[in-house]
Image (tube, rainbow, N blue to C red; front, side):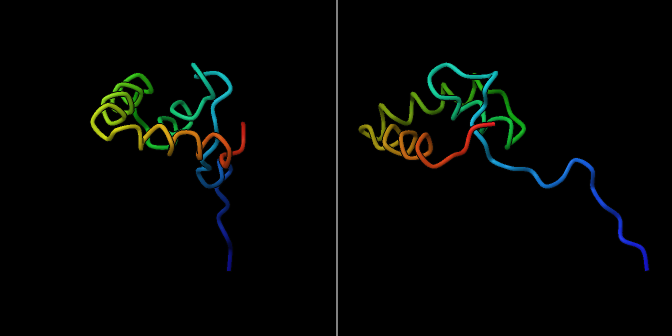
Length: 69
């Protein structure tokens, strides 16, 4: 029985070192989800205004908990 190994490995959620404005959280999430980081940043800004700051708290928690690349 043979096992196939994926050389790329599983996708890991990490803060981006290259696509960052503040901490790389949006860049890391965008890379993980396969979407544009600018769109994710716009969605976060709108959600922060509409959600009365709650997404900003989630961003800060991700900043603390997500490892860097």
